Length: 297
Image (cartoon, rainbow, N blue to C red; front, side):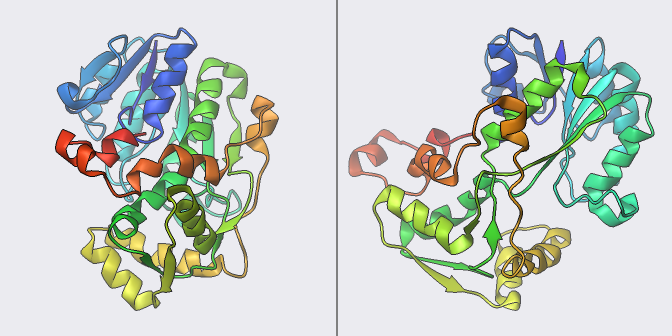
């Protein structure tokens, strides 16, 4: 039995699907089982990931677990990690590329701090450290559907965005094979595109001419906060994107090395998610179609 936390999320759904395809028994910790939309083969345990008792119950008898931490703060993570690792001998944790092993854990944000909790536990661990998710570009969907201009800071920021299915592939591989214990895998997409080039790729996919409007840092901050972004995320994120103009994210071949296959491109991702960015037809509106549902990850 393998426990998957975040099973209804962008990466988690693909982890569940990959494990089931490999004939693994899967259990998921979910808050709303009726709305989870997971396959019938998945055993559902009702509870919140921030509740240690719920995690302890969900983890009982599992041989491995896929863990993500759903907050930009480490507050509350220690008892949850303790509850998980008391039950599960092996944990694959979805961390982040910006974790730097040469720095103290507290300087690596929540991802480095959760990694440290796992290192200090009795469980074996594998850390997946992806860069930016291609799926995060869905935040542009409303602007693209309803107009031809997308406002953003640092449009020339170079990013090696990774397809969420590539992350899930590596998660499945490492959950099923204990020889990956103790590894820290940096994961990226196969090539660098600027944010402006990402917009162009989406436009080409949906057949729409799109234009980028550069925001100042302050304009971007106000827009992100108004959209409900976490205050702890906004400032560092804008600063990071600005840094990528002169120092783009790297391309790391981990996915190909581990799977023997090339990573999925951003263009592939845009093709798979094109319905999230395009205008619905009158017939689709009448049928109550939802781009978000059709492009769900």
